[in-house]
Image (tube, rainbow, N blue to C red; front, side, top):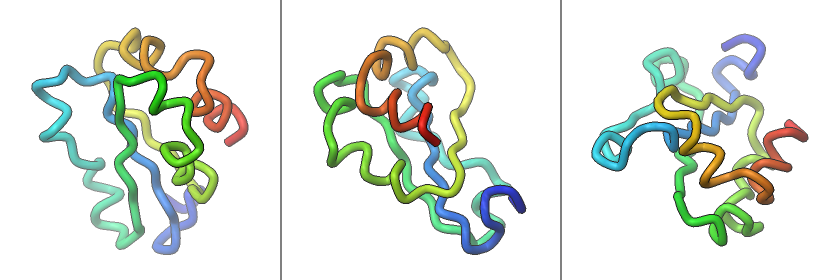
Length: 91
């Protein structure tokens, strides 16, 4: 939490590795919620969306990113070689 900016952190939470049945229920980890920090949920399976400036805008403002577990290939399928991936590497 401290490295992410403490109570002033701007978290991006990415639950995309979870299954479609689990994703709507996904909430940021408890430590983020308890911190009082702000957070944005960033999720899509549409590569066109993942490659858009509008979708990746929260990443440019983030001070911390949390990518939840699940099937990691879902992250690759959604974000590989897109603006989202580039923004994450730049983070």
